[in-house]
Amino acid sequence: MKLKAFIAILMLSQLAQAQLTAEEKQSTLKSMFDILSKKYVKEEATEEIEQRLTKHYLNGRYDSLISEEDFAFSVTEDLREITQDLHLGLTYYPVENSENVVESDEKEKEEYLKMVLGSSGFGFRKKEILPGNIGYLEIPLFGPLDRVADTLVDAMHKVADTDALILDLRECRGSMDQNTVPFLLGYFFQDPVHLMDFHIRETNFIRQFWSVAWVPGKKYLNKPVYVLTSGRTFSGGEALAFLMQKRQRATIIGNITRGGSHPFQLMRLNNKFGVNVPYSTSVDPVDGSSWEGVGVNPDIFVDTKLALHEAHLLALHDLLEKNSGVERKRLADIIEKQQADKPIFKHLTFKLKAFPEAKKVIVTGSFNSWERESLFMERKGDEWILSTEVSPGRHTYNFIVDGKWILDPANPEIEKGEFENSVVLVK
Image (cartoon, rainbow, N blue to C red; front, side):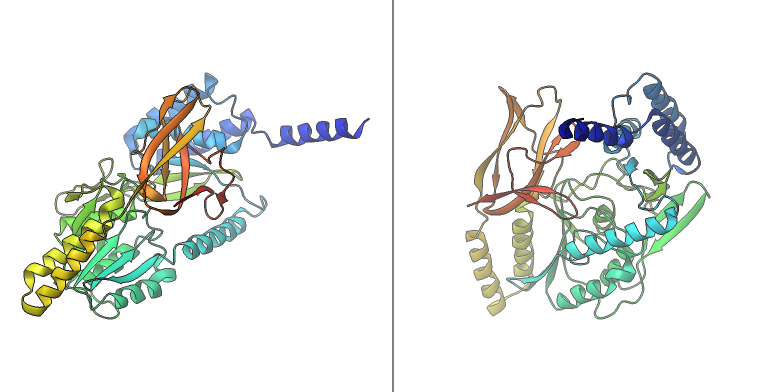
């Protein structure tokens, strides 16, 4: 046998072995139905989930999906179409050692945690003092409290003596610990405040969350706070915005958030898949409201990329009204300079060839805080096109084709990290 033919046969054999079988799909779905029936917070939806996904399976909807990633994506899309729950989903989550799943899971989680925390500055990507003595903290996520407490305390210590504070949650995708947001909120209230309740479906238990009574260092009391949000802000990030807004402790500036309030846990189904199970509701203890499915509406709607500039000006104007004499003149000078330094944007055109049957194509990236429902591309000829304004500098981005994230096939510049993103430099 010739070498090329042998290699081809070997590759086909390996591919066949790697393909997801009908039995694996069926058993995965059954295991998922069993868990959802016991734990999923929307109990009334579990029967419909099982009926509709079983029908999809029997009708061959998943037959052509031979990769684990494609199967997980398709099932997740179906789950969310039924429930509108952005936390619910099937995930491809293979283990290194199928004989010791627990040990392998723990190793994987620890490696993932280190990577995520390291790339996010342990929850605080930027800690700055802006002109006019305005504190600024950019928070991409809320990590486990035992891993990020020192960084959190250091961040609040840095801004302790500022006259106003901006919390930037435009790229905050959630919280990895239910205790981190209540701990941070302890800095903004003199006495403990009943923040929210978790109604856990399986046990019918209600867990209360309060802001902590004592925090290391100074509390940030009686000073204005501004929270920046976007269509990317999700889950734990939404919780902070929602709770500060409800208690009239902050002004929310930016765009409406994604709308996911259900706490979830990843549960192993087999050695290839896990399911993210929302197991409780998060509700305001006063009126029972939440941001699930509706998001948090800002007090002031602003284009996401201008939110920081506008919040900074608003903070300066608010301080100007409270001061007189030399300090008022100083603030007026800063305001004039900030107004003159309004961000400059340049036109950038994105193009994506092929995908003629796609129903919805979106481009998203660091230039719009990774919002998923704002920059819709238009089909022209044999490609999808969108022109938008972005600030000069280096930006990462992706296309979203009918819900699936893809790199720009025409751009070889890729940034690798927690996620892979295409890179563009705008001069």
